[in-house]
Length: 279
Ligand SMILES: C[S@@+](CC[C@H](N)C(=O)[O-])C[C@H]1O[C@@H](n2cnc3c(N)ncnc32)[C@H](O)[C@@H]1O
Image (tube, rainbow, N blue to C red; front, side, top):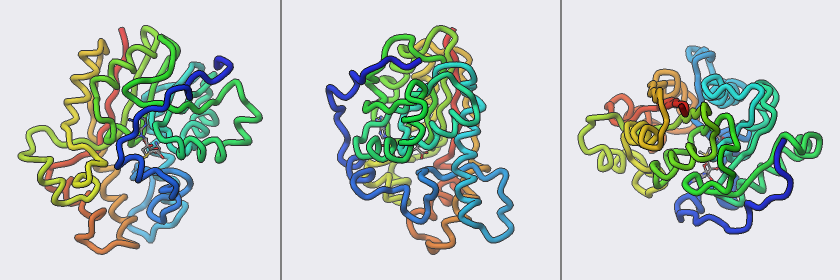
């Protein structure tokens, strides 16, 4: 059961200007490269990339990215929290397909939370004890100690300014034995000058919206926060070619989003799933 009341909106978190602007009044999930209320690049393993892609394929890829993370987080029968939930449709998917007792979606942006509450209004009304949305930063979660069995995050950690603070907060809000599963893009270990090269290729890195850090930074932060069994797996082959194939409908080669594939091919950037559990 979720606790009643919402103590979480008392002190608004500080939102970095780049994040504030990107997820502000204009709903990014309504931009044609995204679809279905999601804002992620997608996990395309189940989609045939040889044929012409449809809107349904695109939404499938975004939902499958969630399923890939939820398979690792294993929220069945437990209390789950998602960090950087966006419009909260991943929370709804988890409720529908994974049977947790309750889910809390956390996002730093008040406009995203407004959209999440609207998009999930029927579910919130029908199952108020199983779903809630809370305003908060990954680095300072307005949640109780040991409140959750699992914590997951989909394509949000590239924005978190302090991965160590995020890892400490994840350890604090999980019960002993709790699991964490995070998927996002990070730089490849050993790549020379990744920040400079990514800023040259991708506007979102040049602007500071996405932060260039090796995936080992998150893995080390989880270890330092007390997590065990920290594992990092590249899922780039299931993400980048499909994302680029979808982008090719709207963007010419060399335009900024097409350079995500270039950054992966040049072994500067990759997409990872990082998992760990508390002893
Ligand atoms: C790319 S969107 C992903 C949304 C959703 N997970 C999805 O896949 O559709 C990133 C989300 O992370 C949120 N975010 C950015 N920085 C955050 C932080 N420090 N703490 C919590 N949420 C954050 C943004 O407001 C945005 O909703």
